[in-house]
Image 1 (tube, rainbow, N blue to C red):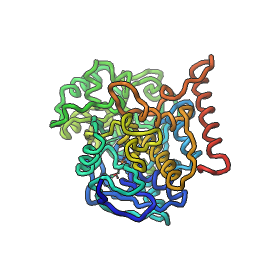
Image 2 (cartoon, helix red, strand yellow):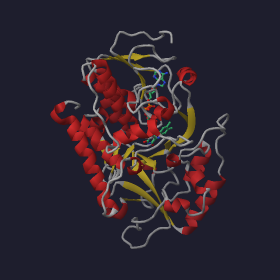
Image 3 (spheres, rainbow, N blue to C red):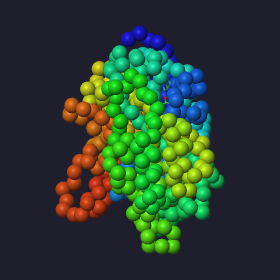
Image 4 (cartoon, protein in one colour):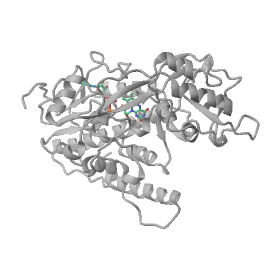
Length: 440
Ligand SMILES: Cc1cc2nc3c(=O)[nH]c(=O)nc-3n(C[C@H](O)[C@H](O)[C@H](O)COP(=O)(O)OP(=O)(O)OC[C@H]3O[C@@H](n4cnc5c(N)ncnc54)[C@H](O)[C@@H]3O)c2cc1C
């Protein structure tokens, strides 16, 4: 391949998103000079809107934070390894019950400042149009990679695609709090605004939702909707009560001061630390903007809601990692070329950052010619790397971290205890790797 983006840095990272920032940070921590290319503000995807790094394009939740959950475990592993993304998340978190949600502006600012002030990192605001020909390159241009680079990746390694969707955001002051109420499920705090519906209200809302007009999508016939981020209207069409067992589940959210459970509840989660903005949890949607306003305003409490962002739907792209990458996120065909983030087929903010962390660590060892650690599938971060590089089925799909992709544990105990034991085992492996500060 011809040299097209020359640099004298030790490593080149393309994309200052969650994966790219984490990868650059891990390299810099090891004393390696990094050239970090970011296309914003010259090229900005439809879903991105700020010029800062590590932008959260949809929900501000990084999901569950306990060790009884695989994504909670992944976060803890990343904290123990010394992840920048987790430092930023912990420093900018907002109240969200058992989940870790952040103030998205402060989160991005924390990371942007840490990256731009790092003496080993040079930021270049430029769209990269071809895979750089440098010795050590990490491509972390995300699921919405700009078209010229996507084409070059496609020509060199091949690209797949699927659909993903984002939820709308409303201002808190526009929610009618005479109808809606603050509460977390099972009285565990009061972090969410809840909009409860009785059966009549749900019926009207449901009929409007399934009959509402969606925006047109052209040319994406081969793409697929990712199950974990399914548009609310698509989920509704699966059955009258499907939403009531999913995002509109009323369990643990009785009408205030009563023991009466609503028929359905729409939850609104805080977007910023001041609590001025809230997103509609699980309401990723592809409805036309006018239809979103009409249908979502039928939700009790949202009759006069001010929508500061409507839901959107995007084509996402990812490579066929099982045939392209090693467990180090490195190209099998070209040594020194790494991929990181959602473009590898990991799914989610934290998973993307985790793959950036490992790609940065492994590229760093290659550059320094030192022996890399082994992150086995006993760990959540190792299991993800193994999943994307080792998947053997016919239909490779993006994957959130989960206990199912980790090594099973030989133990007869209730599910909850088994999960805790898996987490304990994982963190012991991470502790061995980081012992003496070698990786951290
Ligand atoms: C619409 C949408 C909604 C999503 N919602 C969620 C959600 O709610 N929760 C969740 O956990 N995950 C969500 N995801 C999935 C995923 O976790 C995020 O996309 C995540 O940001 C991926 O991280 P990344 O670092 O791989 O890519 P990104 O964070 O997108 O970073 C890629 C960076 O590369 C830059 N770039 C692109 N092309 C070039 C180029 N040619 N040259 C230089 N720079 C370039 C981009 O500007 C961007 O800054 C969503 C994805 C999409 C598309």
